[in-house]
Length: 129
Length: 129
Image (tube, rainbow over all chains, first blue to last red; front, side, top):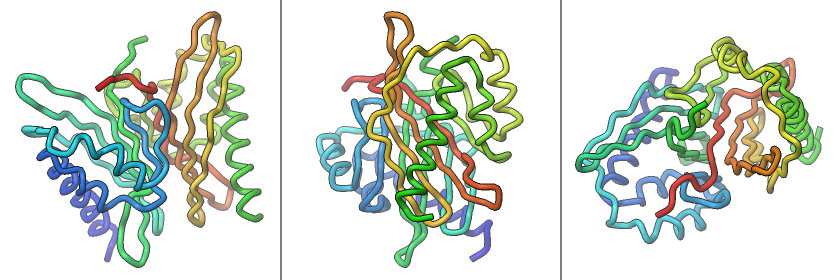
């Protein structure tokens, strides 16, 4: 697979997980997360270590999230052999409101394909100087 | 170099850059950032792409930051060959105030040693469910 195909594959994996997330299904992300995934989001007091702990964190959200649509802004993949760093801004829309996100995802390719070893979600421009 | 030494080296690189940052010197981070580094922090409207753009973003901060001390909480390095994913929580103290941070850094090892290809800083528990 050439570089362009790999980049397209990784962005497609992310979009598929995001589509399921927006329909209330966190399993899309859990299925592409590695057992040793590390994870940050803006609701947590500390980093989450491991897919099992991430699954427990996501459990109460199942069926509660309904994103109507989203804009994935300038997704970029930095590809280094078996590692790919995907970064993007995201605007998610729900009712009249929208949330602006920063996201970084580190993907690794092993014998089973690409999976996520690091996820970091945060709010865009939370602070102003 | 064995795994433990590599992990210690990466954490030491981060601490050294952080120490200089807290003394008002952003060059510590710029010196360990790769030319293609991608970067998020909570003040930005969009991702920054590349060390040159990051240097411009940091320029007005030179000499203005004074962190008295910080706690680096549970730094973890996920090591995958030439790629290392460093994650930690950080509390930085200045006067009577403190700021709680999430941080993820992706390091790559090339012929010149380890450098950062992705940086993501965000505020811990910005949102509450």
